[in-house]
Length: 428
Image (cartoon, rainbow, N blue to C red):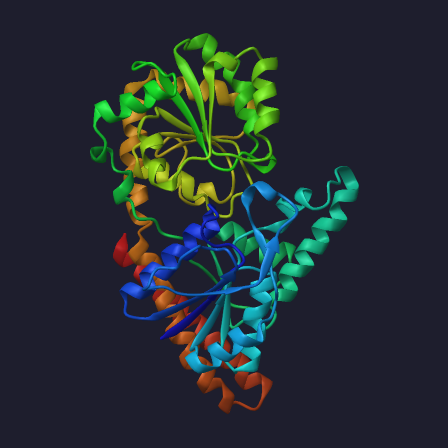
């Protein structure tokens, strides 16, 4: 197969979307498929020789500049000519904006089926563009839902990373009569394993951060932004530090809320126990997980939550705010602690840190969960969807009546759904 991936987010940007795209590209190549990525200019200074990367002219996105996102032209005649020569079998869009629109145009222009992965519930991020709060905020949220609905109208199917996102599209965005398949992004758990890091290596990193060998490390890792609700965790820390004086709150990552959180730590008079690393190289991320004693997160806006699975793979117990997507793979008190009320965060963190048996049970069960989210299963499932969609795209052209088309679509949906379920059962 010749697979075209159209994305507004790509390397060197660090995000769950980029992680998913990198994994998709890698897994499809493993299976012998040709993968072509279409992304904004400056996505990389020098694509490697095994990579088919085409970059469209772009400019820096003015909102949330620290993430280095770019807005590309939604059409390029030169790139379109190259795509015609390539002869794509399928278009897989990964965003609803410039490159996503280009992918839709290419699909229509060259009569190629297109599918879409819906990664981001944009209404949770609208504050970056329209800083409106209160009851008036409903209007930009409705606008975000309309954009999402309109984009997928002509897609052969939609991929979502979680049931939460599937329900959002169906019931909030009112996406009707469109097949949606839930395929969580897999991860390569090998880099996160504890045996990769010696005690000396972890202690050296602790020392460089001003953390003592026997200190308890509470980790947040991810984008330091409003939607991550890190302030909830920060407000829990005075109680935690009072109970466990040698605890440290380690925040790994960067973002627009960093300065405000630094000020909050001073206001709470806990700045000596709070450490901000800023952005770290992705290759170092597994090491930060492995020097930690508990991973914390209060965000309820995630569409999947790859950092939770990474923490499980690294053998770090989780304390997190309850969210629909997390409840899909975290069973409370079994492989993580899900907190329903903000006021319960301190006692839950203290409970995990002070109880070795509880901690070891969460670690063991969490690691077993992480193994279920393999990169291989992710690749197998998407390959299956590609093959069935391409095959059906050719077949359905013979149908002339709307009833026959709908009947065919229902048959295809059942076939793909049953096949995906079998793949899941085989792995688990």
